[in-house]
Image (cartoon, rainbow, N blue to C red; front, side, top):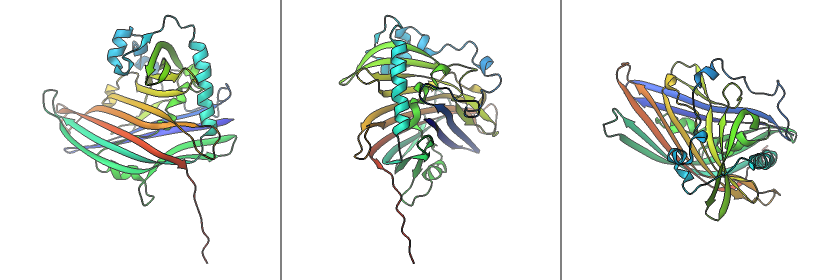
Length: 336
């Protein structure tokens, strides 16, 4: 079965005399059942110079455990792995679960509540200006195509059915989405684009989990985060991250992603996403689906007010909560 999926993140920031718009996108194609995409199905090749851009970058999964926990506080309580012997089995079983998810996911809708926070700080020593807003919308996951080939996309709509994202962007907030597809880095068709490390074991509530870190390989990865800066030219960025995988069923239950390296050339300092997944059982779908329940996103970058010497920091926090997942159906009525 062939499945194609993608995610898109859009950010637009307004400052004094400046409008900086950022578009994040992750696009990818995969042939499931342990097959690689053919050239016609693969996403665009990595940008030229990507390997030199990441030269000398040390992924945080290669850092000693104590230092890694400082970078990723969610790892507090981790019992470090003594060897990498279990890693191939963990990746194989987890990949099968991710492939299964994309095979079974269908048109869905949910209620979404987002707490949007914008921070603006002129200088490191100055007090940031804070503004925030709470919004509610309808969150959609739509599958386009047949049983053998499909596109899986995510949308938001307001109560009138209009594009919700554009309304929030005009108010100067970051809009983030695509969290149901975050696990695609572990899909069977994409695993050879990343380096993986079995970090150890950790207890999450009542769940015993394997903790696996990953880092995309420059020059090889076809999945990417893309940002469109003020000049309009897209910047392609790679990520690293950590996944918490249930030992009983190899389901990813929590995932964190970070940029592999800051992109100073486009002013992006940091972009961190933390996704918690929960089991959703729908009456007319045999297999349960693991879908986002809570998501936290932090984005930070530098910009200026037209004067090259007057830089300031802009940072954003989004907290998403999802509830009441159900099948999405469209009803039509023919009127005389």
